[in-house]
Image 1 (tube, rainbow, N blue to C red):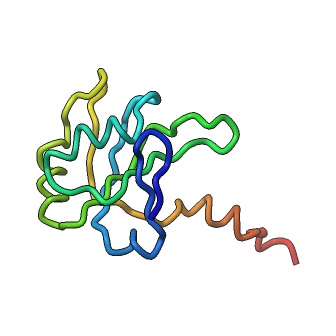
Image 2: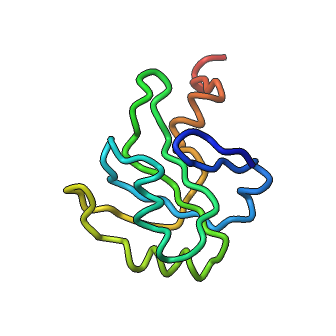
Length: 117
């Protein structure tokens, strides 16, 4: 575990796998991890928050992940926050799915057409 800028705590990958994660969709592109922490910390102890950014522009992708130590706290937060309006946007909160979309996996795997022999 180490501390990043602006009071954000980053956990090692081994620590994250024991946390209960959910995805927060439709957040503002200006939303920071600290903004999400202020919204969600009232529901329990948060272990990690991550907002993915575009690799070329560094702009937020409009979604983030909140990870709790307790499954009960995570479910309570999802129940209370799903559908809430934050920064003029209706956010959606659901359990995180970590697999990449099929088209992205195929592109990264060097997929070739079956016609090519």
